[in-house]
Length: 114
Image 1 (cartoon, rainbow, N blue to C red):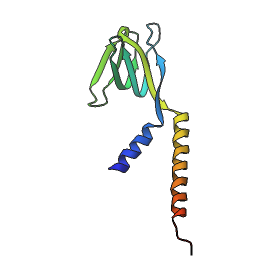
Image 2: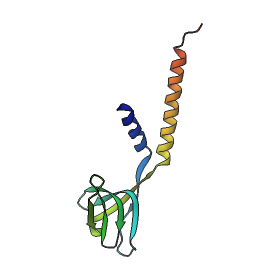
Image 3: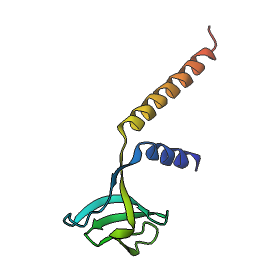
């Protein structure tokens, strides 16, 4: 169970929310694959999957139960999309390398010398 939690923690370290996009009435409809986070005027934050942005509404499915969710574009302050963070991924890889090196050095220092 601890290993699974560690793997999930490591996977989330490689992603970040980015790109503040506000739906505009003059833009054509567009879709966002994956997860998107909506910042609403009433300070609510909602995470949706497979988002479609049109001039008058933002529609997507809720991750928990795949229920369709629609909110008027006028109520959306911004939309962020989850993407791979190269800096977080690099930091994770360096940290893992340092950890492995530390374990190896500790193991070597505790080995008896014949």
